[in-house]
Every structure is written in structure tokens, then in C-alpha cells.
Length: 79
Ligand code: SF4
Ligand code: SF4
Image 1 (spheres, rainbow, N blue to C red):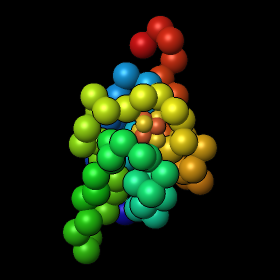
Image 2: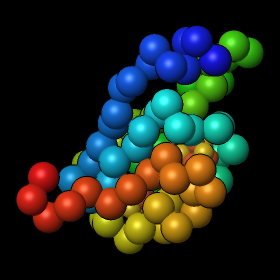
Image 3: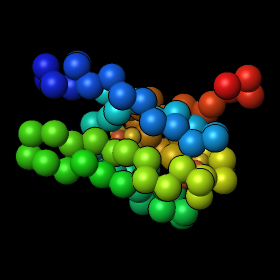
Image 4: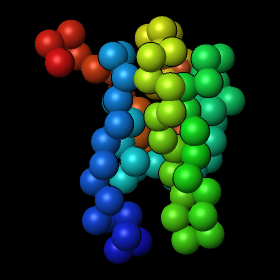
């Protein structure tokens, strides 16, 4: 849990923001995204989704609606 608290990295595409600190590594976003935007860090002591292909994100928001832990949010128009 300490490592998670210290890991404040946020990754984003043009359309969505992933807060890796909130990610519970359920991998639902990976299943939901048809464009292979997400990858995973899957070590025994450290697991979370990450953004591998930000350029491929179309902003469909499937991942935002899929994540039960509110780790993914829409980027506001001003960002
Ligand atoms: S759906 Fe949410 S909690 Fe699950 S892996 Fe993706 S970002 Fe993490
Ligand atoms: S908004 Fe759509 S295309 Fe972009 S990461 Fe989420 S599911 Fe994939």
C-alpha cells in the first residue's frame, strides 16, 4: 500500500486520464478498449494498468464507464 501511495503517476491520452494510484488491476479497461490503448504492470507486488498507445485512443469512453474504481476519467475540454 505504501508503494501505491507514493506512486502518483497519471497517464493520459487526448481524451482520458488514468490515475494509477486508484487502479485495482482488475483489467476490465483492457478488455473494454478495442484499440489496445492500455497495457499492464503485473508484478506480484505492483500491479496497475498503464497507457501504452495513447495515440490510438478515440475517446469512446468505454474504459471510463467500465472502471469501477474511478481510476479513469475524461479529460476536460480545457486540458
Ligand atoms: S478498469 Fe480501472 S481498476 Fe481495472 S485495471 Fe482498468 S484502471 Fe485499473
Ligand atoms: S476512451 Fe475508448 S479508445 Fe480511449 S482508452 Fe478508453 S476505451 Fe480505449
